[in-house]
Length: 210
Image (cartoon, rainbow, N blue to C red; front, side, top):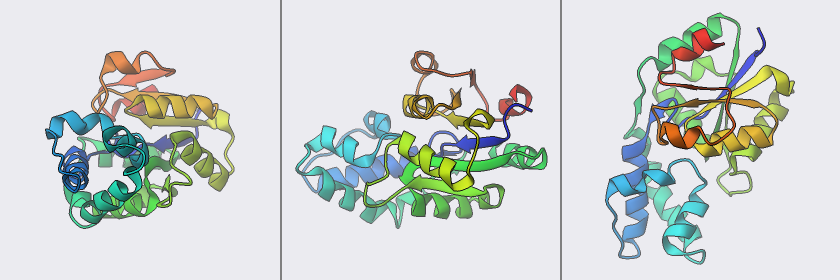
């Protein structure tokens, strides 16, 4: 098989985390007297939080807003979340086929680990990769690079799976292929604009594709 290692994004790829993330963003915004419709905040699922809050309330307030966000997310928002259909079954099949599975998420690694354990899917992953709380590692390509270094992988044997342009662009910058999923937080026509080897409508489609 061409690929031996699969990197998965988390939000919008393995789990539907829209409720917890959007409510936690609003929690932070409320500190500044702002509240937005939850559906208008989905575009901020994927990029680093500091970038999102910089756009929403300005660079000066963004760091404090990230702290406010995490106050709620770390205790409540983390669990306002659900697995997408066929995730657990697909991960088990891929593991049994001999693939090495990792995550490469822009969410802080500490939250990635908690979420994977909460859904009892941490057992499928060799590396549960994510960003750092201090923001030093936050861009998708930086997370991917860290996971690559952790497993000493040949880039030609790795494929990234994600639901937004940030996954596709990050993978391309790091020289690895990417599969886009259309059931997450970006529309198919948006994903088509960025480098990908395929777009799939259900995570289980990856089994036949690979």
